[in-house]
Image (cartoon, rainbow, N blue to C red; front, side):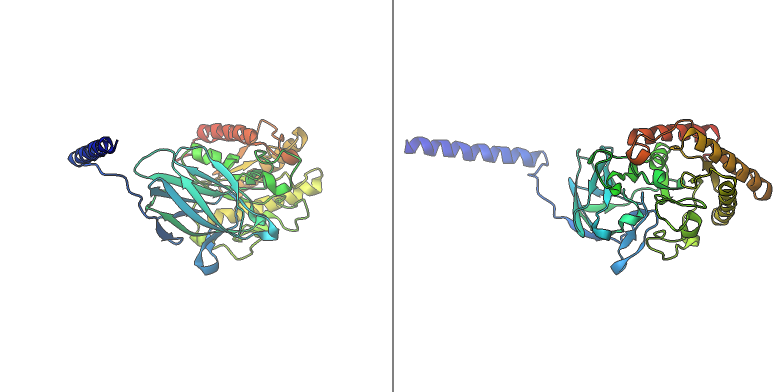
Amino acid sequence: MLKKAKVTLWRFVLLSALIGSLFLLNGCHAPTKTALRFFKAQDQRIRKVGRFFKGQHAAPTVYAPGAYLEFAFSGPTCEVLLQDQERFGKHNFIVYQIDHQAPVRIQLKAAQNTLLLKAAKQQKFHRVRICKASEATTGAISLLGIRCEQLYKVQAPKLLFEFIGDSITCGNGADASEVPFGKGSWDAYHNAYMSYGPLLSRALGADWRLSAVSGIGMASSCCGLRYQMPAVYDQIGFSTYQEPLNMKQQRQPNIVLITLGQNDRLRSAVAQQRYEHAYLRFLKRLRTYYPNASFICCNSPMATAQDKALQSQSIQRVLDQFRRTQDTNIHFFAYRGIYRGGNDKHPTLAQHRLMKDELLGFVKNASLLP
């Protein structure tokens, strides 16, 4: 038995040597695990799209919904270090997407979080987008750094769309993948990444910027809000973080879409007049910020037929005045559908896709793309 065991061991040694020689002849080697390198959050290879600012310890920080980070990495995995403000004890939702894999929505669990990203396929590098899915009142998210084999910059698209609105534009009340509609708190259903604005932007290969707050209006807000969009638009985190946003440093959008009116309750002549006056003043101010952008003013996709008609009449009157006194690079869009199947009668994720389809047809037919 001992002699037989020695023969078997000798054969194993010879076979191992032969396999090793074949690897060397073919220029191959046994795989080795590459150590991950740490890249600072301020690295210029990380694109920050949205209302990012330098927060605590100069970490890139953002309150606004839909803001996102974009970069590429090599290797099978990547670690992203995120800090959550935990405002009111609540945690933000984020959505991340790797290459063309399906977007993944998760809720952060602690003040400091390590997000482990795994690529599904082997390729030279992997493109990543990490989006703040919750809105400003849930608090800020800061990037603390990235660990990966190598970090790469991705090319920025030429187009930028900005979407100014309320809870609809935030993607609030839309996502029931974790909690059934009506069973959770108001912040359980946020998904800004899959709302109509980012969907439209991705369909057209554009960046996006969301300037939206749940409950907000043009002249009158709901749900206990004591401010309106014109009063907080120039602030980094709207009313949540009231530091001024440097408008001169903001990237110029190609198209600005405004969807405000659902919370203004235009059921009286007085309410309509206040709304129209505030709307016109806001448009004139936006024009000073974005002199070359096309403006698209939309009625509410979740409004009833009666409210939608009232909004449309008021918006059309505002646009007529703007064209007479300012310029004609402004358009009106009316949603055909009424989308209110989600939480608290907000659009669902499926309905956001239908809204995107309506807008996509309008933008293409109106020849608004450069």
